[in-house]
Amino acid sequence: MFVPVVDSNNNPLMPTTPSRARRWVREKKATYFWKKGIYCVRLNVEPSDRKTQDIAVGIDPGSKREGLTVKSAAHTYLNVQANAVDWVKDAVEVRRNMRRGRRFRNTPCRKNRSNRSKSPFPPSTKARWQWKLRLCNWFKKMFPITDFIVEDIKARTLKGGRRWNKSFSPLEVGKKWFYEELSKLGNLYTKQGYETKELRDSLGLKKSKAKLSDRFDAHCVDSWVLSNHVVGRHLKPDNERILKVIPLRFHRRQLHALQPAKGGVRRPYGGTMSLGLKRGSLVRHHKWGLTYIGGMLKDRISLHSLETGIRLCQNAKGSDCRFLTFNTQRAQLLPDLKVRVSAAN
Image (spheres, rainbow, N blue to C red):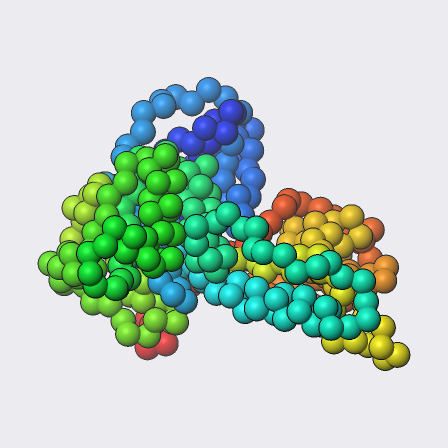
């Protein structure tokens, strides 16, 4: 794994090796920091060279998992397998049912009014494409990226050739919006699914049918092939290590919980702050170590594991947590599959 490098103004430079990054930090030439789970260094001195190579990001969209690869002609810097945002549709339905239920109870409520949303596509589709764009912006802050290449996906629309039919599918509308935003970050290229398969077959690579597995050949093999097509002509992947990224789900402030408690009283529910700490933020606890902030109960907050997301405790004091940085996702560097297979044998 290479270490991203930025200058004193946070402008991305070419990545360096871990040993060189540690030497820079030891000699006070650089200061290390974490960028949403990735170790980076910020130079304290003027860099010896500001020349950069072309770096491309290959994107393989998916309904449950997605693959993204950051690669130059010489090295593969990062392989990311990200979980897709797939809970918005159910959350919107629950919100709708709660709002309808309040209108039939003897409680203060507003009158029904028409949908004021001006978004051209549903919230669930919008959240999926926004998540991909956030990942690309995350990469852009760490690497001098010049190109983006995406495996183009299409949705079948009604036959007839009418003009309105071009925007019939929300998937097509969301994809068009994503391409417009992505073209602002760099050069944009697209490939059809069969073209990606031809590129993969030409290199003798195979894609696994286990789509939910944490393997390089599940999704990242396609994203690597796409980025390699733009900037490099490697004959086989030089880095198959995967960074697993899972977006954190935040429950926004609601009027009250869905189910009433004892006595028919409904407690407040949701929000993004816990005792003055923003939920999802990375903190260090004297007992549980590096964790992230969850919900709160009275004067106590819950802490969650960075690797699994499991709640470690729900009685931590705010004074015992040392704030490190804001965070909106979980990132875990998975062990190399080849090393695991050789160790098992």
